[in-house]
Length: 302
Image (cartoon, rainbow, N blue to C red; front, side):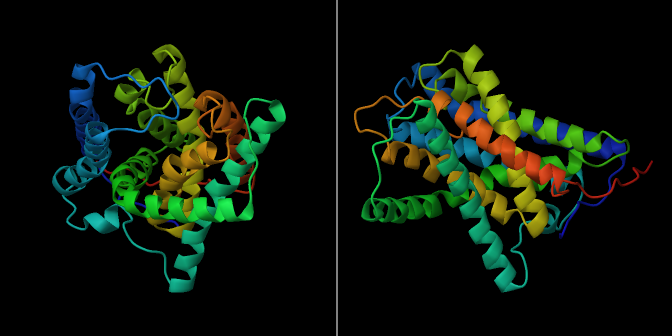
């Protein structure tokens, strides 16, 4: 397994860098979502598609973590090699890169299929059925949509996987891996708070249901993205995996459901309990086989 780490930083420098990163990432999210919050926007239907204003606000928000990461690395850490610091590279050689890019699609696709199977077996997912032609048509459309949205997911994962998790993993102590996973997962989830308040990920659910659900979802999805990032030595597979989860996986839930059935993400998606079961099983396998081990602790200076 190929693992990359940012250069070790003095504790004070690292803490200042983290504060600047989180401040900019969260401020950018709230600022981008402010037009919708002021408007009183509320999503109540799982099938509803975002309008032009919603898409514009979402796009701006998703770029905030990347901007925050670049600022923190370049000006707080004084590192001019921003791409290296954020693992913004393709795996090498090319055959290995292709393998990891395909894995980044296949893993979340398999998790989504498992999620729909669990939901169907439990009677909470209204599975209509699927044909080879229908599945192929959906796959082609979903692939194009995912590719078009990739720049936005670079905006997120350059922050979470490229910047935050490796820096939370630095330092001394036997709990640093737990600190890194839990800290990044919580930051990743709570960054979505403005959209959760508007029913973005869980339409119709109150905030006190949506926020804990998002914490669980991000806490389980994060190790999967981290495995893709660590094993490949690149943030790109994590970007592709995140893009699939947030775009193709959502459209898969919609595509194979009965056309008139209500869609409730809390009960029939990777963001709901069937998805939590599927992701938890994979995370356990990854953990028990050592694939979630973080690079060795670096000794802080000064």
